[in-house]
Amino acid sequence: MHLQKTVKTKGFMSQQDLTKGHVMQTMSLFALPMILGNLLQQGYNIVDTWAVGHFVGPKALAAVGAAFALMTFLTSVLLGLCMGSGTVFSLCFGRHDHEELKSSICASILLLAAASAILTGLSLFGVEALIAWMQIPQEITHMTEEYLRLVFLGIPAIAAYNFFAAYLKAVGNSVIPLAFLGVSTVSNIVLDLLFVAVFYWGTFGAAAATVISQYLAALGIGIYVLTKEPEVRLAFCKFRAKRDSVVRIANYSVLTCMQQSVMNLGILLVQGLVNSFGTVVMAAFAAAVKIEAFAYMPAQEYANAFSTFIAQNKGAGQAKRVAAGIRCAAFTVLCYCLAVSLLICVLVKPMMLIFIKASQPQILAAGIRYLRIVAPFYCGIGCLFLFYGLYRALGKPGMSVVLTVISLGTRVALAYTLAPAVGVAGIWWAIPIGWGLADLAGWLYYRCRMRG
Image (cartoon, rainbow, N blue to C red):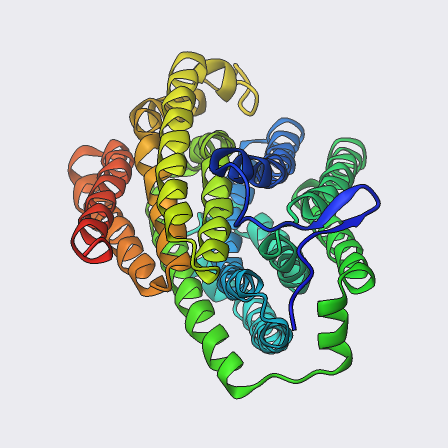
């Protein structure tokens, strides 16, 4: 039984076959809503940072920045499971394998529900231990704990939204996830301004705004998918996960989850080292990484779109389109990263002033120094995102784990080695060095193994 190639729903493309059409145009049009969605997501993260930084103060900004790094690590488990599941969904869609797709959906739900429940419980139970492990300064411990206890309650919403979004993207629909993310972003911005700027609820208000917005997005996209996508609705109604499907989803999802977790664990370890330099550096880092995420995360979303493109074409046996997609993606990401590196280097101070008041020159100077060291090397992280997506789509998710270990292992080892000798700049220089070594390993593996 074959999957329907293209279904239109209220003017939107419900499913898009990425195995046909001009390669660059097809990939770019599919990637654009994903990139816009990512920018929206970064937008409300930035509003969180801006509201707290301007209406509460640098200590609250440091607390939210530290908590954000921890949440990114914890939710990377769920995001990895969803990304791995999405790859399997894309392969099934490319092969037009109707029954395997439904079975894979059920297998993914089982794994994700279990992971979400365990992660929420452990996080809430171990919040004090997590704060101690991250070396959060005593002066901001209370604010960090208050923020974390509330945002941990949003973990199930993160899991639900990303599951439904992964399915839609896997079948070529990147528009609907963008729409519901847009609703979430607008609500988060409005609630941030209301809770923090008007009610003066501080970090608690920022956390409440985030959690409410997450549940709005999860509920909305869940209702849409169950109403408009028969494959998912049938999978829920006749819930049956074949053993082979569970194993396949687990193989892809667990390795992708491991890759995401290792990556964010390394970032968390670096955050712990940054915390040891005090609240000035913490606040500067919190603001600078928001700018950085806004700058290079579009390359990450493009790489995720590229991964779906490669998976669908691999499933359909379109080897020439796979090769063409790799060339197109490499050219596009490199051009983008070069442009954004130049932009940040030129506008670094005005960008930092979005989050940091001019009356806080130490924090401003520390953030500018970070961006001037790291920003020129965004091509390194852009290429690394492409390697992650490529090996996930080609059925080699373990290689993504290897590249992550190389990148983050180098970053952590160098940071902890250099920081005592040269100060915080040693942490910053370790970042692009790690990207470069991982890119070299990814390229050598592709040349030697994947191309015979």
